[in-house]
Length: 298
Image (cartoon, rainbow, N blue to C red):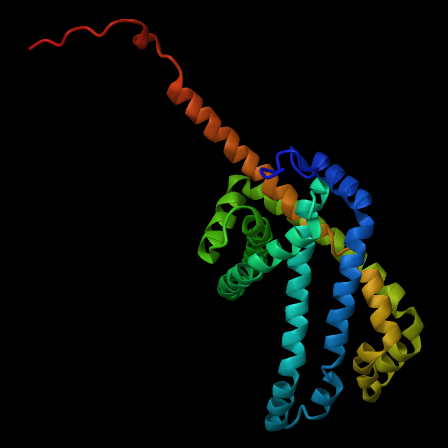
């Protein structure tokens, strides 16, 4: 399945078929995606727990101490970002190649992930710089253009991982190719992304509510007593909170990678179809080709 034409996420023609494919894939491969997501979330949250945000709040009045505290947090924060990146690459690679179930899947998965990691990281840095510039300009002009710029760039970024895994390892080509694929069906692509993003936000809010139930007392105290607000920051290092957050967050984490391949396959297939039509029209026999050419007059 090197060309992935028979991939379960290929062939979505409209929003209804896309979400049907998304749901079918999610149900069929839920266990594998959930295990990967839980493991990655646990590692991220454990490293995040090493960032003492409460102590940062205590020294907020002294800029020098704030700077020193932020320096001490750089290590755990960098590890958290690295684990999150590894999880994202691993999950995309698993979603792409798991349906084929080819021999040596585990070693192939690891190899593809390692090859894609650095190019994807560089491409995402480029995307983040562009996002910051466009969003800042949009917010300065008006708030709505800033939100549109954010949605526009987020939609382009969703193509980056499929392009990295299937087409190219060149970061510049990853960025330019992602924009080209997005612009093939710009408004549907942005619409699909925004709809799923809103669904994920609502689901995440509901799951967060469930996660916070054992800590309702601390939450109420932090609202009624501002001096106890640091208790909410300290909660992030609580083992029960870490476990519940990982278990609930992993339920929605695979949705965006699945959508990434739905959009990629849809727009790439449209591109291939147009190429085939163009090639066929160029090689088609024309009426004038059936008759001998008339001699040119001197």
